[in-house]
Image 1 (cartoon, rainbow, N blue to C red):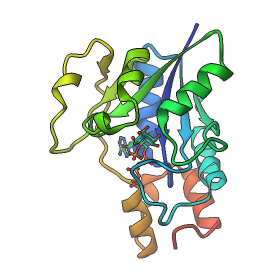
Image 2: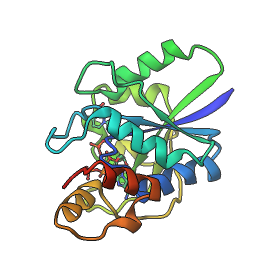
Image 3: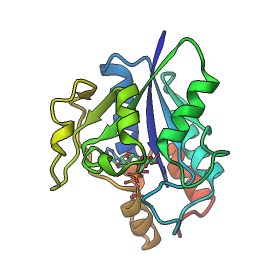
Image 4: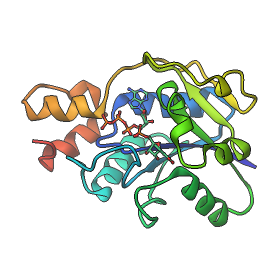
Length: 194
Ligand SMILES: Nc1ncnc2c1ncn2[C@@H]1O[C@H](COP(=O)(O)OP(=O)(O)OP(=O)(O)O)[C@@H](O)[C@H]1O
Ligand SMILES: O=C(O)c1ccc[n+]([C@@H]2O[C@H](COP(=O)([O-])O)[C@@H](O)[C@H]2O)c1
């Protein structure tokens, strides 16, 4: 049985914060692999300055190329938008009928709004959540505190966001250390976020 952690994100673009979390989960938890699922349209996000799915996928592909336990995934590309995670999980279970055990990876910030996700109770009934620390003022809903399916993983906190990277890059600031080299090169050559 392969234990796979699903790490969903817009990845517009993927940055070292994402990569450090994905690698930490693959190396230091009981997960065998982490799949980075590029979400075409996140339910709570606006489409503004959103790069084409395939470009975002290509950057995740480049970022994870040297990490055999990290795999980019296009599975949401052909699913209805916005992409509700519960629907993707149903699709995944159908595609990978045997030999896989899926779990979700999320930051503490997302856990704090998890009660607003579509059918979150169904997700929690069927899947384990691996939660890493994130800085935010909101409180964790009492129903998620000490929950047997929610596992805290002490991954490092790296407060970088794709929004910051896009904005500062457009202003001509040097954001190079925040991206894997291959991602920086691809983004620069393609003139993204200028
Ligand atoms: N620096 C970070 N450290 C850990 N987790 C992060 C970091 N940045 C984003 N995440 C989380 O990783 C997942 C995928 O990130 P996503 O690309 O959707 O967000 P983002 O980087 O915050 O992008 P944006 O700024 O465009 O909203 C989300 O669950 C998000 O909360
Ligand atoms: O299913 C939902 O209702 C739902 C609501 C918000 C977010 N998500 C998932 O969580 C991922 C990270 O969310 P975000 O908004 O922090 O980028 C996003 O890519 C979606 O796959 C899912």
